[in-house]
Length: 293
Image 1 (tube, rainbow, N blue to C red):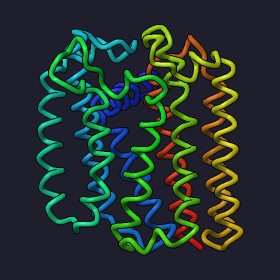
Image 2: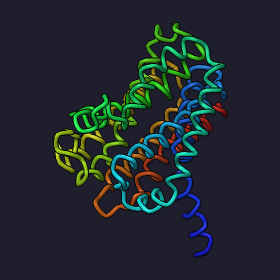
Image 3: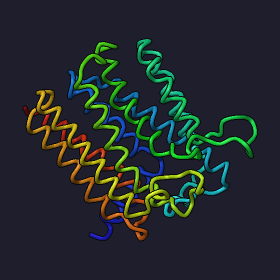
Image 4: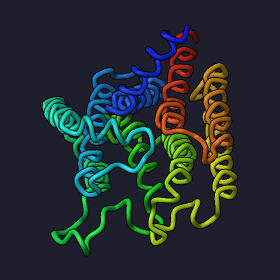
């Protein structure tokens, strides 16, 4: 039993730290969105996953070069030991993303432009002077909202525009689905800012810095409640069926249980495996329900 647990934790840790885990989450999130308002395109979901794999490994490499170490406990030694591997994975992800992007229509390229810029310069400083320039994540008030916006555009807007072109913007359900995705990612990202309280500069004005740990968790719970309200609207206008509504609510409830249990004693895998994993669990529940109704 102990050997099996060690085997599971080791491979889960490797999947998380190499960013395979978050890439899987992004791909399933994108496919979930596509299935709710269409047939679902596996290729665009795979592209989102591969692009996420590239971006996250790119960001880790930039942070390692800037700081000489990585701050998050539990990930520190692994990243330092595997720094070259992270760069190689980033290069592989970049090449695969570029090749796959060649098969995307022009509307996808246009839509990708803004989240792509935010993703690249989230960790990479803007400008030539490293001392004076800042990355997007270092700018006041923006960090968490940029993350949620980028995920919303990549995992909700892109799959739907890819399948329905610009006509999708005329449907109210599209905007409610966008709001649901934005609020969900916003909620599960707040605990990461709580984790980073001792590292983030006070000038960043993150939600925990502005409202304290408890206030930040209350806000995260509120965002999940608002996300659930969006799903009720989707159900009321018959975009989703009742079993899918239950899957949405179940995923939000699971995320809420993790969010409210956030504390300073939690290890890195709690955040990067379980909180990020709530995206995977929610998407799988929705896709299973969507497939059997």
